[in-house]
Every structure is written in structure tokens, then in C-alpha cells.
Image (cartoon, rainbow, N blue to C red; front, side, top):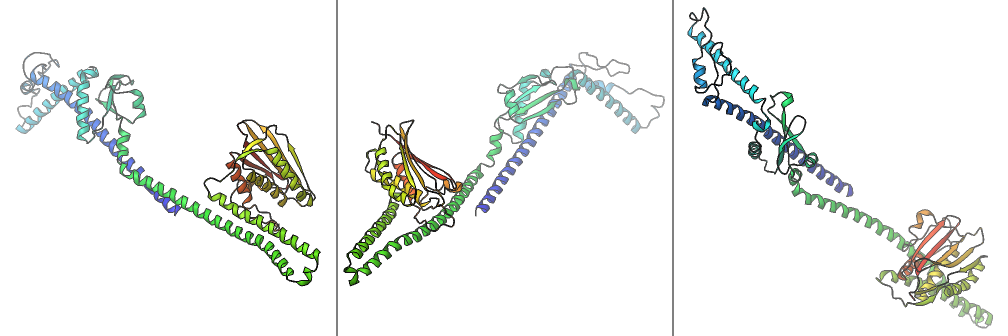
Length: 478
């Protein structure tokens, strides 16, 4: 599903890119055609202007044989002059046929027109560009030609010489903007000498908006496809999380069944023994059976309390009875109670309570459970090849916080498991060891309680060397 949506997204992006590219090419072709039309129109207007002057008699040419060209005489008419002008007479002119005479006359008048054109080129080529192409005239020509080619976007232009110096420009023309935008260049009067060639530069400040307007209707569908892709990825992630959670819950149920089965079996066996009359006659046997029932009941109650801790994770806020507690005193009491259990496995527990100010605002019962769970995990995951070493320490740190450190020399935690040890139902793999049972709730409970107290907890561990849990809790304000 993700690959399909991603492919659709790629095709949409490619389609939008091609539309913009085609719009850009079409727009550029129309602009180039418009600029070419402007350049051609200026040449035609200049030629028409000079011819009108000749026809109006403002300029006069001497077309007689041997006459100077041109002569600036007043009066007369260019067309009349050309009519009265005769080709040079030859010895055999009278013997030509009528058709040959017309052809000869045509060739002569065509040569005269060529001379007129050459005269126009020689005169206009020496004039400054401001006189040949007036700024207002260029602006009007450019505007009308662009509209004729269906381009209505605002534009800015400038006329520059061969060296790139601006001769005149529109008020909004800016060199930096011209470099930033796509600039179209067209030579004005391209038939001039190369050292006198001027160019027309045009750019469109809103060209990008115009190009992307062609795909504006596709943008919503593009973002909807992105949203669909994100939802697909989210769905896949949630599905894998649910699968993992289901596996963890199944593991939890299996462990819970095993943990409950053992004390229930012991209590059931003790109850059956009480039905034996011979057992009732032995006070020592009754005392033993009573102690077994009492111990297994405590064990069963402890397991039930662990299961009930699950309700803590389903609440937005845990119900806590906060009170001011001396951490040094509480930790010392827990360590003293836990000492017998540690010594049973040939280990020892030490305390280093150096915190000068150890007053914090916590729920004493839950805080006791936090420390107890950490110590209990250290016993469960001890290294059987060496004596167990447990230590609990408190110390002052900056920012009005107290630090509690619980360290051991157990089997440690792999690096890939460190980030997940505080997840609910997650249990660190212990290899071939099957004697360690649990629900995967202990460290999750610890993390939640420390967070409820306004503190934080982190773990440092190295495989086969030991683990260290570091808790930081804010001190009371007073």
C-alpha cells in the first residue's frame, strides 16, 4: 500500500513538473516571438519614416546621370524624380524591343531604390538609439505585441548598448531582479554595425506565479496524496505496534499463569494435607503447613498487586498521596529490609547516603515500591558466577534536585534493549535462563511513578558488567 501511494505521488509530481515545463516553454516562445516582432516593427517604422520624408519632399535625390547622391534640395517628389530619370542611352538602345526596354527601365529603377535604402542605412546607423527607438514608442509596441500573443503579465524592460550600459528603462526595472528572474534579450536593428548594436531586455516579475498557476488545481490532490501516504505509513506502524503488543500480552498472560499456578498449587496441597488426621496430631507439621500457606498467600498477594499496577497505565493521572519524605531514611530502611534477601544469595548491599538535603514530595508507598523494584530486578538478573554486589546512593546535584543511584554487578542489558526497558510488557531477553519470570511491568511502573513525582530516570548498562539506574527528583521548595 505504501509503495502504491508513493508511486502515485511520484507520478503526480512528474506530471506537475511536465506541465510547468511545457508552460514555461510556451510562454518563452511567445515572448521571443513578441520581441522579434517589436524589433521588426521598429525597423519598418524607421524605413517608413524616411520614405515618407522623401515622398513629402523634405529630402531630395538627384537621379540624373553623373548627379550627386543624395542632394538635399527642397521641393520635387521622389517618385517623380525616379520617373523622369532615364537609363543611360547606348548605341543599340533604339534597336531594343519594347520588352527589353521595360526590363532595362526596371533594372535601372531597382538600382535607384537600392541606393535609397543604402542611404537610409548610412544615415540611421549613425543616429543614437534614443532617436531611432523612442522609449514610449518601444513601450507601446512591446505592450501591444505581448497582448497580441496572449501575454498579459506585467513586465519591465530596458534598452542597453553593446557594453551592457542601460540607455533607458522602465521605472520598475531593477538589475538585481533582472538577474533573479528569467530575462529575455532581443537585438534592436540587428543589421547595424556590431559596435553600435543595442538590445532590448525584458523580464516578468510575476512569471513564476503565472507558470505555477497552471498546476494550482492539482496542488490539493497532491497534498491529499501526501496525507494518504502519511496515513498509510501510520497505519502500518500502528499495525506492527499492535502485533508487538499482542505478543507482549500473550507473554504476560503466560508468565502470570505460571506465577499464579505455583502458589495456588502449594496452598491446595497444604489444604489437602490438613484433611489428613495424622497431620492434625503433629503440632510441628501444622506449624509448617501454616507457614507454607502464609508464605504462598503473601507471594500470591504480591503477584496480584503487580497485576493491579496495570491500572496505573490506563489513567491520565495517578492518584497519589503526596507528602514530604526524607529519602535517606526511606532508602536506608529499604536496604536494611532487603539485606537478608541479598545475603541469601551470598551477596551484600551497601548504602552511600551523602545527600545533605534529601526532603522530597512523593507518595511514600509508591516511592518505596520504586526502590524495591529496582533492587528486586538486581537480584533476579544477578551473575551467578560472582557474588552479588548492590549499592544505593543519594547525592545533591544542581538545580534543586536529588539524585538516587541504584547499581549492581549483574548480567547487564544489551545496548539494543536499553531504549525499551521502560516499555510496558517489555522483558529483556536473558538467553538460556528460564528461571527469571515476570510480567514486564516493573520498570514501566518505576518510570511512570518517577514521572508522576516530577523527576526522570535513565539507565546505564554494560553487558556482563552490571547496570546502573539514576533517578533525579526535585527537592521540596521549602
